[in-house]
Length: 74
Image (cartoon, rainbow, N blue to C red; front, side, top):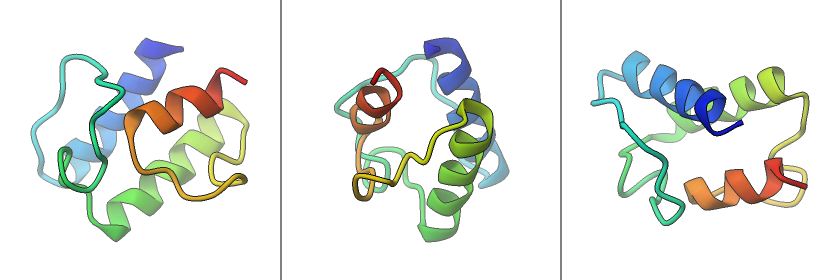
């Protein structure tokens, strides 16, 4: 799951012209640390929903990589 999530995040970062990451940091803030804007966040949510078959925002907005990891591990 971790490699798949890293791939999804890097896909969104790449599409946004941002640098890819080499590892997942649970404390990384999606907006402040990864520099994702609203459109990139929407793309990330859509890709996660599609690739993992879950509604990642069902319990509220995701803010960190750790939020994503926690919801995917349930």
